[in-house]
Image 1 (cartoon, one colour):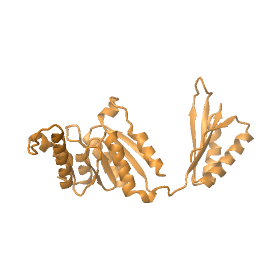
Image 2 (cartoon, one colour):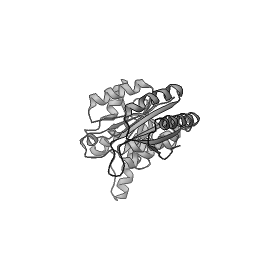
Image 3 (cartoon, helix red, strand yellow):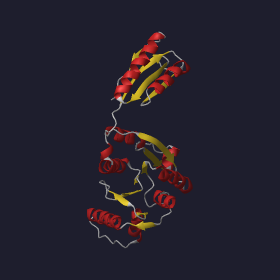
Image 4 (cartoon, helix red, strand yellow):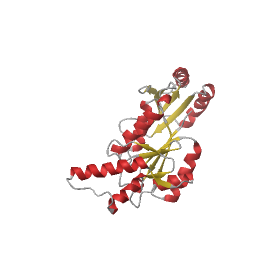
Amino acid sequence: MTAFGLIIVGDEILSGKRQDQHLSKVIALLKERGLSLSWAEYVGDDRERLTAILQRSFASGDVVFSTGGIGATPDDHTRQCAAAALGLDLELHPDAKRLIQERIMEMASTADKPADLNTPDHLHRLKMGEFPQGAELIPNPFNKIPGFAIRQHYFVPGFPVMAWPMLAWVLDTHYSHLFHQVPHTEKSLLVFEVAESTLTPMMEQLEQKYPDVKVFSLPSVGSENIRRHIELGVKGHPEHVHAAFAEMIEVLDGFHMEYESTLESE
């Protein structure tokens, strides 16, 4: 089964200057298509650390999304780290060059100023089109400045207004054959005033009996509105989920545990 991963790049996330929005959005984009996220990592603007993470993810065979760090300022290192992780040189992609120059011309036209593509600042902007050799482009509908793809890794800007439609395009263009292939459902309930250790044997037995089902427990200390409880549930193939959930309720009833249902998620 194809696994999807996410790398979120940027000191601003780790320092708290900006709150990450990508993780929840990528989970939602995948869920809409019957897919799920297998793992995610946060990393700052550190070349050595980011290169090591990318070396590991390239070797995994997973489909990986990476957000942030593909600009041309001194703290943007993702393009360089991707090339280093693969042992490749950076090269200016001809189509990326054209798109960047088109953007420069559009901005100059809007400001009613002539555009000299050979000024130092405009030449520097072309660095945003330098990608590892053999990379393909990811179109950016917001401002034309493309992301890039190589070895099932998809690199997009950190700005949500750009990143999210670009990632949706990647999924719809390259992975539609995986959409909604595996039937999935989830059923859970809240069990009150019980220790997780009491429920563990039942959870283990259910997973042994239903290998296609995952049993989960999410404990909560409670609040003013709800007592201490554990959200206990099963997820996986609908047929097996319904059977495992029915057995779970039988066990809870057998021990006279107090519980209430939660909303079912298909």
